[in-house]
Length: 168
Image (tube, rainbow, N blue to C red):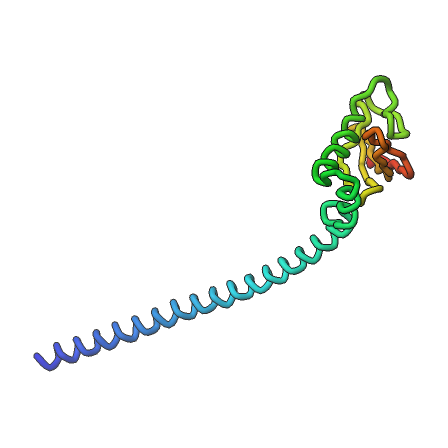
């Protein structure tokens, strides 16, 4: 009888060891799969970060904030380029406050009940500006030049403009 109990205990212990081994192997395999998926995701994220950094560098190319020559142009004339850039943008946005139906810069009249206004401004360099405008339904873009005269006044000159057909 004692022999049978030892045999049953041995078989039970053997089954328990086999169960633990299989269970541990499954857990280990699951962790390895997760690790490989995580490594794959990390690689794809690294590639995405590199692509975004390249795209960001490309977008910064025509931007006065990253154009040292344009900033030096202002600094040689005795201006703080960062302050002057803010002043230029503020003065262009201030043209949105106007009386009557016609904007002082935008050559289109509003086709809705809203005023037509400049929204986004991008200073390209020390002479050129690209801006977009809208009346809430219709929108377009402007290409302007600007000049700071001797009286410290900014003069904007409209070079080219376009309005896009509405999407109805």
